[in-house]
Length: 232
Image 1: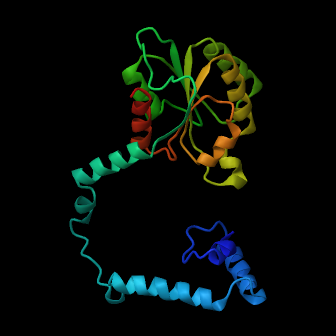
Image 2: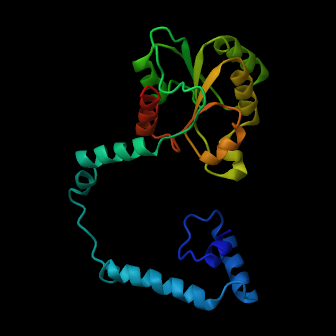
Image 3: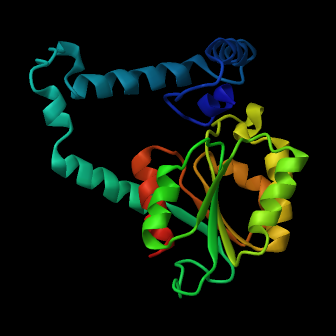
């Protein structure tokens, strides 16, 4: 993949999964002519030119005094939360369930999978609507699946959040097969609003879900804003 990215014209590679393998493959492409040395040299010149324009050739370290306060200014936090809010992606909203309406009569519950205690996401949901909040490990046994289905299957809406995920496809994004199987069963019994705090490529497992929000990561501010977004 990294070698093909160079062939396509990318000057830099960000976070290759295996740096050694990437270097070996790029050298192989150079050796057999699939990638030219001239193209590599042109990329290097562009990167060096950019560094020069940014003044990195005469780098002077900044003083450390007060740097934490400079970085964590109130306006920076406001901007960060604005960017998080803008990044949240409501991938599907088939029955226009989101934002939630008629909260006084809507029978809701929440389930955080990959968590052992109430999550920030669940706590913020509870600020809008009092509801049962359950947690489960990612390895959901048959007995646990039956118990959770009894507790949640008859609710009008169950807000499910996926936590402790992986960014890597080779680990199937941190999803356990038992989690996927359970969620498909729950989705057959009630309306599931699924929130994914992880890699959006994990969506391939949830094509049958009508309501899906992707939040990309699970830091506390993201969980907080994701919950707020479900209520508008």
